Image (cartoon, rainbow, N blue to C red; front, top):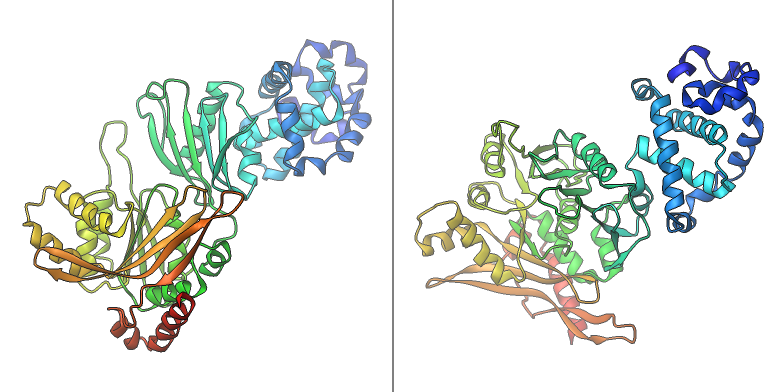
Length: 492
């Protein structure tokens, strides 16, 4: 199926070329002849050690060994590319393609007579399979569920974030070209491109993980790749309670807010967990509601059956065909939505979202970058001004007050932990000033011996928040009262 192998109809004919072993060093073109000498001995050690690569740690040692490993890998990889037929490889199932590549690489190692231990050979096999079929050196990092971010600064420096802290790994790419090739492979899967003419690109992985690529000439020291990983198991509010991001009573309040169709803005800094929190809140939307999501790159993972997902589109090579977030939000108003969810509000589309919120699409949600609920309101005003609207300031604030019911503030604290620090209501106007009211706050009380911050979610004593009537309409007022009362007792 690959190169000359295609005419051999499988491994059955491999022993025939045994006499040709002397001519084999001439190159990989004679690949089928190689298995004759090492066929059985090479296969057995490979089977014996197939389990260890599942562990992440043993892979690090060979990576940090020396340049010799990368030289060998480069030679084997080049020989492999000369040997296989990539068009035929693409037709195979991933597992079959991986096995085929492993067989060919074993043969190449035997032909070229590389001196390698069994563990080195196994690592080389795994690395090359990842290069051809996956995302190369990124594969072991993507497989780990404890990593929140992967940051690649050129081919030689790869950093990860684990438990809120950034650390450098021993992983590296063969060269800058390999890194760029992998970036192009990632973005091409969602119909985007990254090259010298279009060096900045936002994309996503199949699991929804967010990807940003910035390539030379803008990135001076080689392509910079950033991946915000999503956990394989989708987080819920109950899991956030276990992590300490919110108290059980605070989570109950959030569930009610999601259920009773409050218009919600989730505010927070970079990496504070806004999208994760938005995903959690959408779990409490009724399953019979029609939801339309608008995102720059589709990351939200809604569980409801009636969901329409929309995604922006960058301009083509001629600079035409761009579809902005504002275009999507405007269009989804014509699609009979019951809830509109905007993944991230960055500009003038905030005005269209506010219009949607106060024209019958209750329960709409979005996220905004800001460091406090009050700053969130200021940013909304600024983004409306960026759209070129010449409305009086008071009119803009009246639109905001009429649209937004609740602001939920998420924060990443200095010890790396993520917490929901405010659940804040937008009450109304007093003169020209927007009045807000905190329902739940997170108070930092100190830190432990390991430098981890100690804090507590407390009620501010608001017995009947503004959304009480909305909770009563949905028959949730008793749950809301119990949650607030339990939180007050704990504070006392």
